[in-house]
Image (cartoon, rainbow, N blue to C red; front, side, top):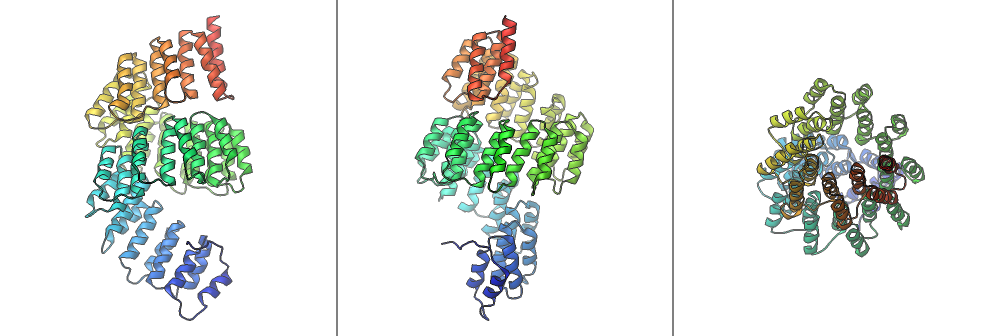
Length: 578
């Protein structure tokens, strides 16, 4: 049984610590583990400072680390006269677990001795915070591997887009625990390979809540809502709010806000994450007033809820309201700061964006990315390059940041030039430059780059396929597009998502094959989303096909009653027809 969590009064601490002249390690361990807040731990620590041994110090370091208080953890570590390998491992893990990866790496470098736990702590930190290059480098440098090291390595290879390497590690493991299976499920899920997710999940000796939610989310994200619902209904983890949240998000992300809200209303109990999910759903769906009303009802609102509302206002370019939410927040984190920075950056309010950037307490890759995007959008390429040069690290993610900024703002020549100068490219680099060509009417260039990517040994992911299919649509390359659509699952094992079907609907429509486009929407194995019907409405409008335009508008109205744009487009179609 775990220790009960309770708030500890100062009197209780003093009486508990001094209840006898000689306290055992287990006695100290009990009270340290019982601390429910950092304030409790600080009170306990103040009483233990002069009585603690290395074992107690290690407990304090670990507990401070779990509360995110790495500075306090380091003070305890520094007070140890002769820290052993266990103490070194705990402080390194504390820094790594909280995202202070540079500090963790420096501690690792000066450790007098290392064991497999030392290596795994650093590896897990890099993997957890989406630094796959560094994680893989650590993994390949390890003198020996165990199951605990292999699990984050699988995640790292998947993050880097090397799914075959992730599978190879999994296949070579002499022993696999539930975390190993969950890691390979997540790897396939992140690679949009839902068929492999389902195949591997069928081989698992047992599932836990993480397995259930990974399989459920993978199917939902790919648009297989009926299968997702079946998994949810049969799950033995239905008391887990994460599963409920996954189902809410499944429907919401597929354009069905009403069903998502109905699931939320029927939940037997709601955790803070459930409220966060619903607010984020309303905000991203453009229902800002509902998001605001829901926030007021939360028993205890979180930073995430407030940030979701802020992002919703930002998405609607309601900067004054976004800033009002930001100022009303009692707590802010890096995500909150980045959200308000991105709001001004995306709106082209460059001076306000600069002012916010200058005030930010911490500058992460997302902060630098936002200011670079703002400068590029403002057509100030020299300042954007200067901001890029000022970034603390210039790894592939930093290069991708500038590349995406050029690509998403129409600076295709600059994007192609930058891409040609990159010494290291990952799948995200290729996807960015592919999209740059595809969405700027350079379809044949997108197809050429796609072929080069495959020849370079990179496996295209769902984003790359969306770009090349879009490129084929703009270039009128119907047969080429059809071949790529077929290759998604047959050659590359990626499950076609709704977005890919929408691209083919657009491809067929632009080729004046409206009947085939409508038939594809009706026969696709996934539930068509608002985006799919919007594409059909668009191509029907271009062709003056009133019947199909009317049908598409009706389907959009059914899925998203508050949407106004389809009626405007339909009105234009009818006007031109009449």
